[in-house]
Structure formats: structure tokens, C-alpha cells
Image 1 (cartoon, one colour):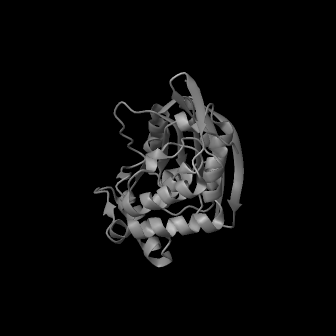
Image 2 (cartoon, one colour):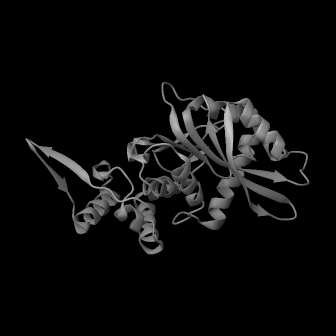
Image 3 (cartoon, helix red, strand yellow):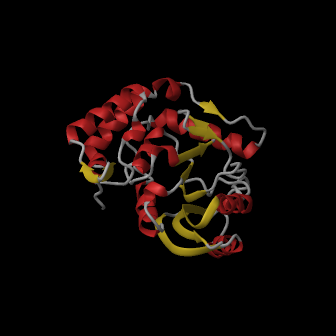
Length: 271
């Protein structure tokens, strides 16, 4: 982890500004209560952000984010579509949210940001991140603790419970004059109806040397309505990535049971 300070030029003298921890914490609480001032924080991961990722402060802040986003969580917006597969995914996701009440401190994507931090070229404060399928604003906050500027964090999902999460289908990415340096996609690939279109769209949305981190879920005994992306073999996925100008950096099996296997991929955009 890195520690950083902010240089402020005053005439002919250059001094280093070290905001007090109490000042930073007060400003953070102010943001969580009012939604103002988030961009005032230092723009690279530092000891303060690292501390906020620890279990107790992270859970506390996530609870506050929950409360400040209560009206969005209770009345989420949903992508309007006639696609049967997407509507099935939306219905399933809404049911899981209702059953599990998972609004607070889920850290399912932390490993993805560890990998991005490891493999991305350059400092995260200068990079644009796209999160596909984050579910909640807390996952955007988690990515911020790694050093991304808040304004450079973008997110899309089929269901949105916060204005910063835009409604969009991963198979139909549409970003005008905007490209990213990193894209994370957890528990999405496997529900895609058109995995080829998904990876092609991601490739077009990434800058050269950009990093893609995602997991593939392959069902060992797929049902009739199983999406195509959940039936692809590792070789299929590897070839699909290569076809779309990706170099696979890492592949790791993270979960396997009798019915399915989940693999986390890290790939770099070559051109």
C-alpha cells in the first residue's frame, strides 16, 4: 500500500499539506450525510483510505451510506427491456436482494481491486474505472478506497439504487467519447445472453493497456435456458478474449462444486 501527500505551491515556496485525521474523518462524515465534498480527498490510496477498508470503519461507513441512500434502495429503478433473459435476471436479482437484505458491507469485489492495483500501469488516481454489476453504492466506495478519484468511478447495472449507478446492459455498452483504464465485472459473465457482444463491447470501451477483471461461471450440467456465457469452456473464453485483443495475464479457480465452477480472469487490452 502506498502513502501519499499533496504538494501545494505557494509563490516561490513549496510546502506539504498534511490534513489532520480528525479533519479528514469529519469531512467524510459530512459527505455521507450531505453528499457534498467527496472530491476534496487526496486522490491516491493512502493510510487513511486503507484504514477505512478495515472491517469496523468499513461496515460503519457502509451503514451510513445505506441510510443516506435509503430512498433509492427502497425504490430501485430497473432497466426496461423486452428481453426474456434480462427480465429473468432482473427478477432473480430483486428476489435475492429482498431475501438476503444485503445492503451494507459486502466485499465480494475486493479481490478484483487487489488485482487491478497489482496489474494496472500507472497510479489509480489518474485512471477511469467502470464497474459492471455493482449492485450497491458501497461497492463504488470500496473501489474509491484503493485510490480512484470519485469522479472517475463509473458503474452500470440492470438495477440501480443510486444515481451514480446507470441502467445499462453489459451486452450493449454505450459510452460516447469515454474510455476506461480498468473494468471490473463480478458475477455477471455467466448470465450474459451474448458473451461475444459483451467482451467485444468491453474491448472497445478500454484504453490500450487497460485491465479487465471478471469471473466466469460455468455450469457443469446446463439447463435448457442456461445463458450461452455459462456454457463456455475456459478455452472458449480464452479464445474470445484473444479475438478481442486481450492478453490473459491470470486465470484462477476461486470456487468449484458439483454444479458449477467459477474462475477469475485478468486480461490486458493490447491495442
